[in-house]
Length: 144
Image 1 (tube, rainbow, N blue to C red):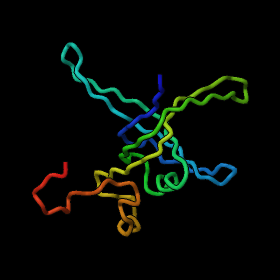
Image 2: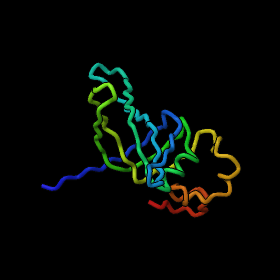
Image 3: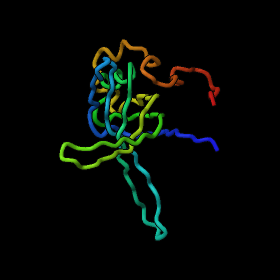
Image 4: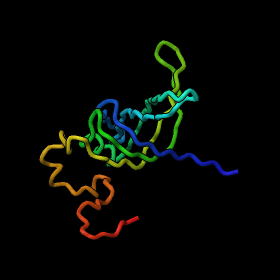
């Protein structure tokens, strides 16, 4: 039987990205994403669950995440689940389940790209992982 490890998440950053470089110089960024799930209980009560998921992004995409994302930014990401274990300096065993994202799409902000600065306006959205926009299409055909 073949194994498959793939996850797709849409949520909002819980904190600003933290960029670091490993000894080889490769950039890596860490941030958290909050993912909400709305549901109705058997009694008809509306409920919401929030999951807080640690995210890791490597390479050039890590630098873009650090530059253009901040706490509250909505993102769509795709990657794999990874478990890491370590021993603290006090001898305690710790582990974490996290997502190593290989695709991060910036979904924009409710307040029209506030915080992206003037540089955002000059950057091609497709270079930053944005999906193609159909807003400028004057035709009546729906692309899907």
